[in-house]
Length: 101
Image 1 (cartoon, helix red, strand yellow):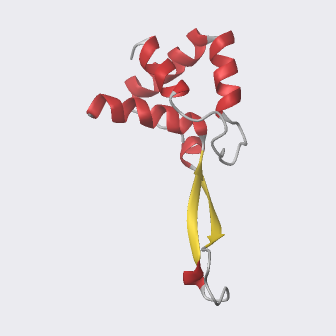
Image 2 (image 1 turned 45 degrees about the horizontal axis):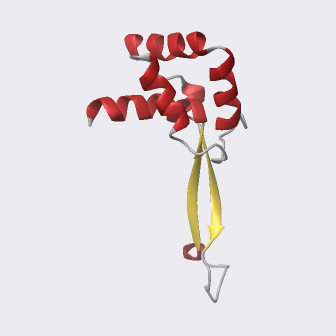
């Protein structure tokens, strides 16, 4: 994977996207890229070469968001579930998705 692929996978994502369990946001990952791009590039390459997607990057938090205008919020169908995923996992997944596209 090239440095440009890793960089674009980081910077194409919104800086304020909701983080996962670690609370590490893209803003922090962007800062880390500016300070130490070689380390992040090497990390992504190691993961891809080994075919390894770290478990901690795959953990998600499910959050129930109430759907607007529902008359009865005691009904589970009045909510929408969203998954909050780890930002580093999103970077790795985007690299793979771009390669497959």
